[in-house]
Image 1 (cartoon, helix red, strand yellow):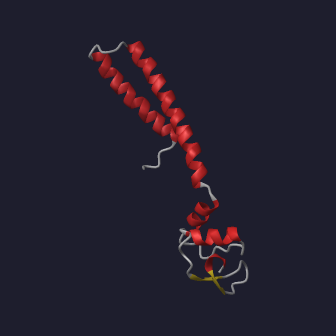
Image 2 (cartoon, one colour):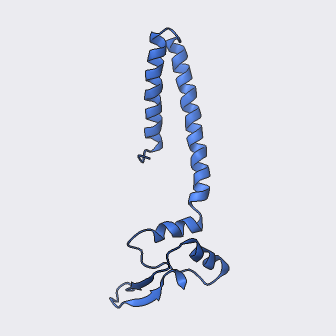
Length: 119
């Protein structure tokens, strides 16, 4: 995807509908008023679909496992430590990377060797 936001998508849809509407009016298929009415209906439906899609996507995209996986995918992230609990172990298992890492605690400059993801 091009990374378009909702306003950009809605703007593109309006432009496409305007172009199609101009063709329909020119060919005598629809009146200008009918084209305007249908454009508003379609834009409203698409807007509602985008809203609903965003709501559903956020349910799956913002789980703890997906957040940890996204953070682990960042090259600058060297260590993610989880709590030794069923939930923590499940989070660790959700991310396939368990590489050995070296992390310098803030302000000390002294490296500390540890195992990524709380192992």
